[in-house]
Image 1 (cartoon, rainbow, N blue to C red):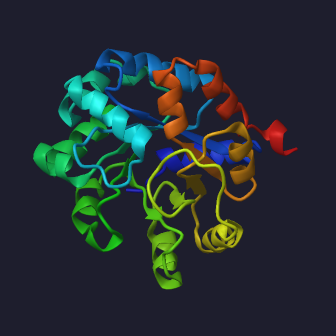
Image 2 (cartoon, one colour; image 1 turned 45 degrees about the vertical axis):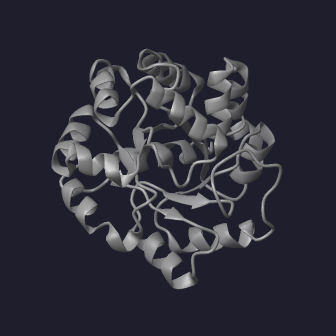
Image 3 (cartoon, rainbow, N blue to C red; image 1 turned 180 degrees about the horizontal axis):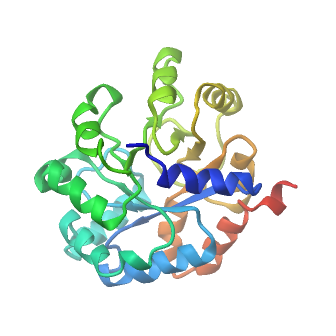
Length: 262
């Protein structure tokens, strides 16, 4: 099945002249009962899609802010199963694509087939599994084959050209281009090699290329928007929700709109 839901949402935004804005939140941070209101706020703010982090005890890609959010969510009893159960109570009211970001162990514990079926029922549009390299995604692709759930690949700055080409050609939904070497988190600046990296990716990929990791200010959203088809913002939004600084989230999203680039 063609993986169209997430792709169409991003391409629609780009056609309007805007850059895609994917907002990351840690599901269960602040209690599962806050998940619905956070999703509603983000879609009202104008995000293109929402990436829902599933808390995990041993995250390898998460920086301090998201790790702490995951610890708070785990302390509140959030699990993959309870998060999907909470989504089931309001998913029909969600207007933007939802992308789950999880590690492989929770999927295996849940059961891959059962997970895929439940995600399809809930209208989940994408899945990111950072600890499964491209060469080991056969099983995941198999259970998602007859769904509209895109398996979104991550590309690092250190990916060699041949690997980068393979990922760009086989990617679904969008290419998650990591802008830094290392874990997620707020940063002051980025590598000088980013422009060449994004140019190469965009030339080889038939789907949108989005920049993620370290983007935390409206200025950085604008800057990355000149290189990529959109951005993924995580730590800054997680922290803003934790501090109840909703104005900062709104400012981040507004920085992706067409008026900024015209």
